[in-house]
Every structure is written in structure tokens, then in C-alpha cells.
Length: 117
Image (cartoon, rainbow, N blue to C red; front, side, top):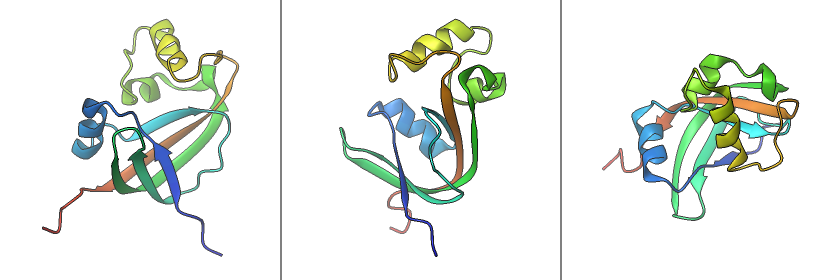
């Protein structure tokens, strides 16, 4: 049986989209243990319509306090300031705490839109 096509919603912020297309943003940290698996994924936004295909490379389930400093940095947060990172996560998940379960998803092989034109 094949896995379903997964989708990960991304911010409508153009700088986030640009980083995904440049390959400098290849990770997301999501509240809750989610059933993502390696394979194809659509990175998309429903607020400002945008979508690209990529491949999920790794999925890790842990508690927020177990997210590594490298994962914070890769997700765009300052390495030296865990409190700023927590506050940044609270923009999306107001009730998140250091003991909250999270899923760390890394992707690669982003297929640029219009690459075949």
C-alpha cells in the first residue's frame, strides 16, 4: 500500500517561500506527534495560493525541550535564545510548552514551480 500524499502548510510570508525555494529552509517543527512519513509532500499555502512538491527525508517525534539547537537554527530561530524560539512557536501554537509533543520534519528535493518551462 502506498502512503497518501502529505501536505504541510507554510506561512504566506514571501521570505519563507523564498527560503524553501533556495533550499535554506528544509525543516518544520509542528505541535503534536503527526503521522508524516518519508516520501512525497506538497509544501503549500492556502492563504496566498502557492505550492511546490518535495520529499520528506526524516520525521522525528520528541518533546519541544528535546528539539536540538541545530533544528531551531535550521527552522530560522536564533541559536542563543531558546525563549525567543518558544515565543516564535507560540505565534502558531499559543498553548505550546517545553513539555509539548512535537514532530520535526525535514525535506529535500524541492521541485521548483515552472522548472520545465
